[in-house]
Length: 384
Image (cartoon, rainbow, N blue to C red):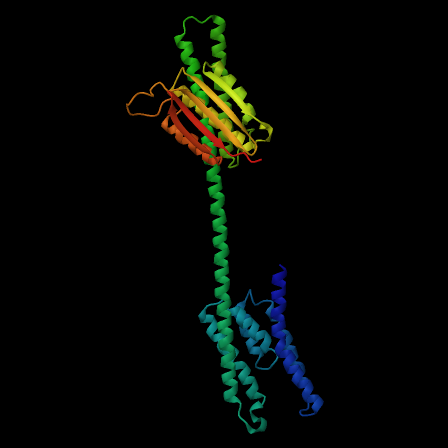
């Protein structure tokens, strides 16, 4: 806003320069008594100059009309040339050639006619007609080039601003898309975990004939609780998608792994845990969230690809050293040469999802079959 005000003041200053120049010459002539000043003519000249300054404020709303009006003022006023030239440049930045050409002719001819009518060509017997026409041509040509240059520069600046706005909008859309993809990953991890638990509980309930009524009721209750939890988590994720925002509900962290292990044990999955993490309260929330989801997805893959096997989860690390997650379970098909997905934790798509999750957290993932066990090794950064 301040820059715009300074630019406007500069334009009015430029419009005033011819008036100051002519006034200075008139004052010097009067002091030296070379020419007797015509006060009436000077007053008319300055009055028309003031009218030109007043018209300048409308140059953006009526560009060619104001430029033509101020050009006509120069028929009777030398000092009105300043406002005429400023409004002409402003018109060149807004109008097309069919409007620029006639106004350019008026801006060129009117000052020349004013000089001729004032008998300036009789000074010292030297004709100034040619000089006046050439000077007017140079001035109008220069102003036209300058005005067109300003228009090109403004158009280029506007196109750059528009491109910047579009680029910013594109980045915002990409950020929204990336967040939606993250939410979709969350939904996959949550639902895959819950549904696999439901399948395990329901399978046990349908095949076990030796369960007491109390055990059957507990299993049914566990199925009901997991189904209810699945609906709540699905509703939370879909609600986030509808709001076009980030994940607002409390997200799991490393501290929630104990509850996760207890949950899968209740469902019948055998899990052995070795946790040597130091300073877990200093672990960044985002890293803790990724660690939780990696363990959750690894347990889900183990239930799918190596059902009934014992899973060993080893967690260790501290600030400055990083966080390590090592998940392993017997690989029932480790000695088989038949094609197909990797056994144990390593379902092909599951590994892809786990690798992407580790990469999102800035870490690394490796997997291999060692001594008949499928081993998944994940390392996540943890700055001191």
